[in-house]
Length: 65
Image 1 (cartoon, one colour):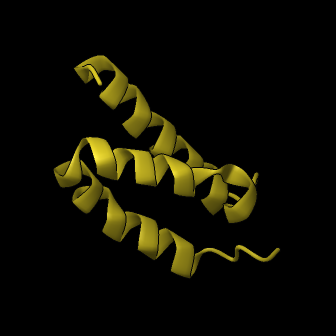
Image 2: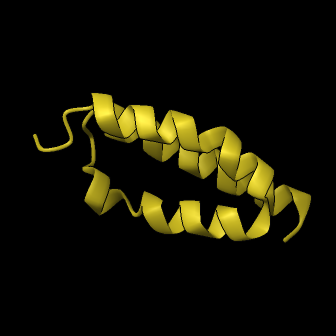
């Protein structure tokens, strides 16, 4: 994966996290889990950086509404 594709993947994940926070899409329907898994395979360091933010977002957001 090129650097440009990696940046695009990170941007997509962060955009989906914002969509989930603002309840435009549910956690399940967003498909963010598969994107996180793809990120982990490609760049473990970036995955470790985003994971705490992802967990916090999932815990704090009312994902069932």
